Length: 161
Image 1 (cartoon, rainbow, N blue to C red):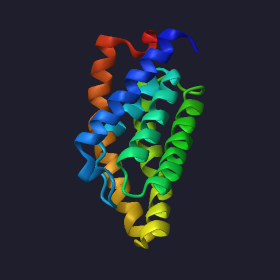
Image 2 (image 1 turned 120 degrees about the horizontal axis):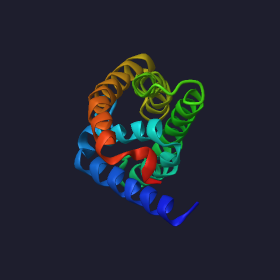
Image 3 (image 1 turned 135 degrees about the vertical axis):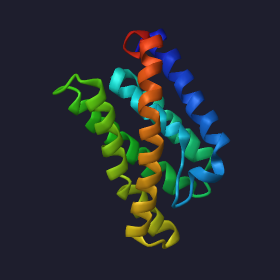
């Protein structure tokens, strides 16, 4: 990993943590609106952002989550699996809007991982938690599509690192 990639991922990690800290009361319940999840769209533009997102999720869950160990394990697994699927899909399609939409669907569907965590850790009903966390994820990522698309036109995430 070159210095430029390392610095960009470090900044992304810091941004993920900072934005998560701002919405902490809404980021760790069975109804989640973790605005920092918008950064998941960055892998659509450049797969090298994978590490910054994963480290951001790891550190955010480690320092801010009331269920630290559970959130570190399940949250990182959810993000790594979902990001990996989007990166794999990007090998077969280059249409950015298709990938941003797929990213939203994949992350939202995979919230069953977080619902399982909430079931294990807190005894919350699995199906209800899956639905509510998926809705929060859909909302955040759907709002993030035009934002990240517009930012990419100015910043060119594919060329940064």
